[in-house]
Image 1 (cartoon, helix red, strand yellow):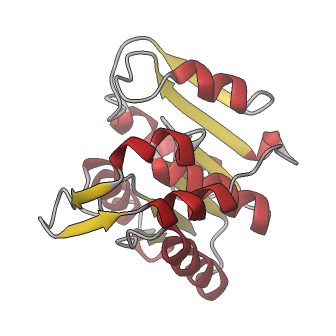
Image 2 (cartoon, rainbow, N blue to C red; image 1 turned 180 degrees about the vertical axis):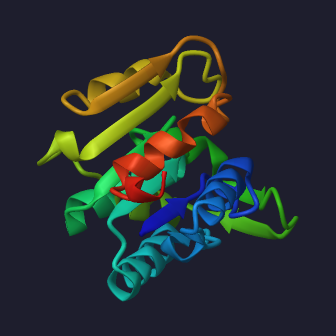
Amino acid sequence: MILYLHGFTSGPQSHKAQALGQRMRELGLGDKFLAPQLPAAPADAIALAEDLIRRHGVTTVVGSSLGGYYATYLAETFDLGGVLVNPAVVAHLSLQKYIGPQTWLYTGERFDFTLEHVEQLRAIEIPLLAKPERFWLLVETGDETLDYRDAVRRYLGARQTVLAGGDHSFTRWNAVLDPIIEFAGLADSL
């Protein structure tokens, strides 16, 4: 079972969530894919993800940007595999500049990102990975939002795919769908 976690202000309507879900449905694995809309408050987002992990037997968490930060915490906490796509490495620092009114990209709904949310991110930081080998880092060097080198250093010891160019959206996403499914232990359907 794969749990996909979107990035800051994104949602399950994102290209990455939709493409992975579609590929899994094509392989007859649609019932093994979850991509919820995460709440704005990090503590609530983690609570939702933890509930889904417990109820659905999630084995792999795939997270993009802020979702990668969440995926790191969840994979370490629940001993799961983690696929991290251009992940936020120190989310409580990189997101401080976004304190204030924000808008969900796909729904247009507004929310306030607060200092309390930043503190909630700080509370789930994993300072040292217990098992880096449980992770697969996917980064593109052209990421205009986050410095890919921070992630490369942070996930030392993990499987790493560092691709030249691209951007924060991870432009080569469709090329890694089957390898992600394989990484999640669902390769029998490929």
